[in-house]
Amino acid sequence: MANGSRQAAWEFFGTELKQRREDAGLTQAELGLRVFVSGGYIGQFEQAIRKPQLDVAQRIDGVLRSDGIFERLCRKLIDDPRYAEYFAHVVELERLATRICEFAPTVVPGLLQTKEYAGAVTLAANPFKTDAYIDEVVNARLERSLVLEDAARPEYWVTLHENVLRIPVGGRQAMAAQLAHLARLMRERTAVVTVLPYAAGAHAAMGGMLQLMEFEDAPPVAYTETSFSGTLVDDPTVVKRAQRAYDLLRIATLSPEASLTMIESAAEDYRRCAGTT
Image (tube, rainbow, N blue to C red):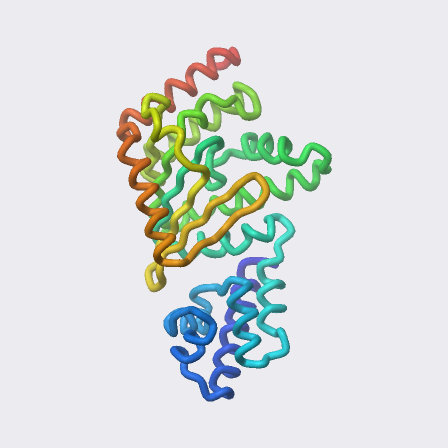
């Protein structure tokens, strides 16, 4: 489903929700209370500013006795075969975020990956899939990165573990190109990237992948991921703990200038080993 038609479908979701809520004689605050979100959230769902998670849609169906329509709509709209089910909603939120902060312990974040790097990562995780499947996933990842080219792009802060620079994903030439791409985005001020060096000691051994997203008119969320699943969290207490964990990592990183120097030096090492200039 194209982005335009997908947005139109979310607008239909919001219009239908508003109509059924009013038919039930409930205010936004009253419905929010019954489905464990704020009334402001309900208003944002109705305006298609923010998209509900599947469990919220299911609870709305229960309260409004809507015979599963909101669950079905939600499943339809987040059902993109290019993304894992647990990640599809994150992609929607990235398009709405005003600020994204990310910690990457092993691989370059998807929003910053080159085509060759993304292809190597995808193939490594899916060795028995067809070339067509690999291309589809890679193209979806590159499509995600377009959010950073938008005039209203979010502030993007990235902390990379030094592992990310040292693991030659896709081979030396692909790594040289990937790190050069990172350096270019840093110099263009598209993203602020810092490196958590091995020398950071205990800090460098902390945690897994973490993404924090902030929005203009909605509370922040946190997303964590393992190799086979992901968890999107909007509980304010848990999100605050995740933000603190990210802050502790960031204070142990190199400065942006020193990080850029390390990234460009690693890129040069890969180029030299690959025999390219």
